[in-house]
Length: 321
Length: 148
Image: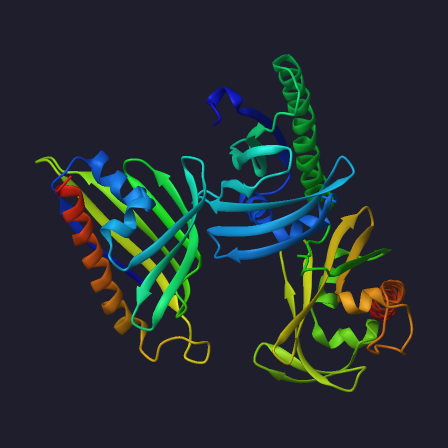
């Protein structure tokens, strides 16, 4: 039976350069964490109704895998409380919260606090003094780990990296490129579905509009329905309906001096990621390396298309004078 | 869809809350509750599963409760009854100025479609049945707490 004196507490804080709602939403999206905090092996979300969530997460701690089952509760202000019915193997109990506070002086930033309450399991033959020392050391390490998690989120928002939720076992491929153009120019280009065939290999021609999407012929000879969703913070999602399934690829654009930095992210199905390259273009057998090479080619074509557009515009401007 | 039912129980709030909070007592209070298994409880967070007798056969639901004595119990089911997609709820307890405790039980639910195994009735009609069950259960708790 435990007593209140067995409980230890750990805490860490960080200032994240993004609005509170956006930060709190990403902390709730546990399936997206793998792209931010690299100690996560996998996450299986068992239940999520927006206010309550149950998941099992496999994480690396001290070179070993730990499976932790956690239940989370989202308060109206976005704060997240949680407990772990299956805690880390070193603990008897584990609960805590993520708190999100706005500093009125910095409304576009958010202070995130991580609070943890936990009880360690005593080791066989361990004296009281040894246990007290170990608890102190553990707390220091735990606070370092919490700080490292928060710092990953700080970095994530600072660099506007794309967020991609991991669908169990999927491999996430991201490629980057720098293009000499303005944000307005790339926005006009990326937001138009009709431009997809000029830089991607998968989309071959754009047909008629159907609702808020366009019918698009693919390299595989199929017709799918595609639209481009403009998100905030320079985010564009290419959303395609293939039968009943939605497939998404994401681009994030950020200004960088006189150019723009473009990140392109797609999820690769596990069956594809496991295979070696082969099977022809867009065939059923494909590999991560092939996918990444294709994405690099596509980004190069995107750069060429935008450069060509800029050249045409410059020529037109010359004629006007 | 959300439904609510309320009842006044002639007992102090602590005793009333305790009866609803103690899942081990449910089989003695509610005759259709066949078994309860509490797999985690730290004084606030609780994980449970419960088997209840229904006309179509026994049903086992499971989920979590947040225990906030003596004013509130919040519930959500990760495994709701087979005909439901979602089920969550709340019991609120308030001391009455003249003595006694008012209990208000709220349930929020959505049904599966017929193709998914849901009932061939509208949510409105289903809500009427659920409201009756909720009312019956509150009356059974009232009897149990008042005879303590």
